[in-house]
Image (cartoon, rainbow, N blue to C red; front, top):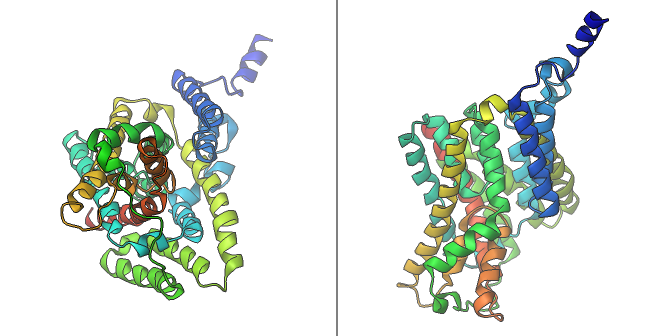
Length: 373
């Protein structure tokens, strides 16, 4: 009888269940709590957390990850082959209005300035002992761009993919907490009250159609590795703006994108092996990600302040903080902080310019890393 019970026990998930598995399940529970109770990026954190639960039930008994037969093995191929992130960008392009950026082109520079955090973090990560590929993947966290972080980590086959993804999405969820203190520290009340007007230049339909085409060609020629992300972003936007493919744009922004997000997030969570996740290097990555995000936010604000020394029509420095890629969360935070000092000040449409530019900028930064390393 004892032998039969022992044999049965060896077929259960309790056999081989380690403290690392238990710790990862606790972490998954925390992420689910934050996502539901705090309403912090639930569309991303809940699939990631559930994937972590699946990953930390011993694989030997579930069969989920068996090559060429396990369900999760098949789902994760879209992650490891670099398919899901471009599909997410496809959906983002189909639901994003680039006219905010086109109406005020100088905001592109603010989106570019935010990428400084990426390259500074890359150097710091190298100094801390991470290899070139891992340093590049970690640095992209500073752009607050989850799909791009995952895309770079996947192509570089980084063992830190799960912690990079979770850190990136966690900081996106914490934008309303992290950014306001930095904004207030680096700006004066007078600067935060700068008004930029309620009307933007009218952007013609021709401009909206030509922009994605020209951008795809330029980025494809200058930084070819960025083309899977930028190209799909621009393709989605072209479907939205040409006026004749509304059904395709709707499919891209809803059905394709949402499906890709589900499988991408589930795959990332399912890659969270406790033995790799619960290490000192993981804590370093969390710290580097936070530093990258702070530097990116500060860089955009400081460039906006510098621009005000030379331009006639002043820009509210708060919109520089929106240069990170979290669309439209970062722009909304800029609007919220501005209205704390002046409830009648509306800068949201202006903040969307650098916010959209940041999406393109982080993808181009990823392409630079992929080209050089």
